[in-house]
Amino acid sequence: MSEYEKICFVCKRPESVTGKMIALQPNLFVCPDCMQKSMDAMNNMPFDYNQFMNNPGMPVMGWDEMENEMPKTQRVKKRAPEEERVPIIALKDIPAPHKIKEKLDEYVVGQEHAKKAMSVAVYNHYKRVAADPADQIEIEKSNMLMIGPTGSGKTYLVKTLAKILDVPLAITDATSLTEAGYIGDDIESVVSKLLAAAGNDVDKAEQGIIFIDEIDKIAKKKNSSQRDVSGESVQQGMLKLLEGSEVEVPVGATSKNAMVPLVTVNTKNILFICGGAFPDLEQIIKENKSKHVLIVSHNGALSAMHCHLTGAGPKAFWRFNSKQGHYSAVWVSGEKRTYDCMNYPAVWKENRK
Image 1 (cartoon, rainbow, N blue to C red):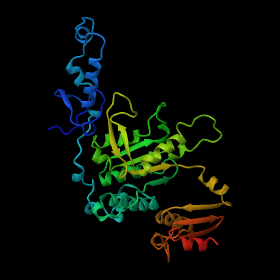
Image 2: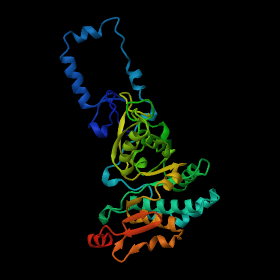
Image 3: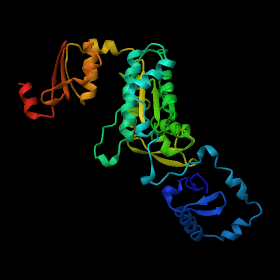
Image 4: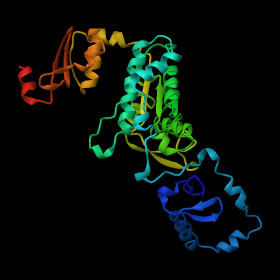
């Protein structure tokens, strides 16, 4: 039995989507929908189909030619039944953060803060993926953002991390992405590259890592009257992937078209790591220093921000709580920061007086 999915020759959908295929030849299949549409079209033809096909000038494609049209890069591996699917890394096999950090130290010199932060983030991500669904405790999906100038080692750190964990990795440049229908790579192509890195195994791809470099280059362009097909439009499309959703991606191609098969991939357990130089970040902070800003997020993000702004050590990360519970909001006014618990309306109301 083949390990690959049967793909409809006409619509390019896999058997897991269309239902049982009709075999015309050992490696040539048509789904029931396309077969029915073909029969309906033939019955409704205003002329004799047999006479049309027997016309000496009518080119006829041989079965062998039709079979060879599906390249191996577009063949999708069969998926296990949902109840039999297992995490790519078992919970007991996930290296502890300090073990990941030790491995990174063997390959990367310096960047201590980045290595520590990445080790903890990756450990938490795969611990969430390997968590037993029966526990009924769902941990929110989180991704990573790396900020640093060109040549600081962002891409190398991610490559090393994927090598240590032995998970598929896809690296893409955000500047090549455009809105669907325009010249350039579709947003879903980042998942297509991950699928290719996983050997077209959807189960493996759904637990891999995607690194999107030059993410700062897709910021909304100022003073532009033209449609921003590679900036804000890409941001909106990418949000759906980052937050976790089921998307149809082309197999073996960077854009959707009628000649390539499509497969559904769930991005809920894919770790997205975005990197960029953000050269204007300091200037933006200076310009907004005198303004009042309200930041609402989960406790982990606010803890990290607090440790960075105050220079506190890693131990302060775990002590960043109030008597009422986890902080979930911070008011920034110049140099002053006020932390609050929005989970408790009474406390929030009292602190805002």
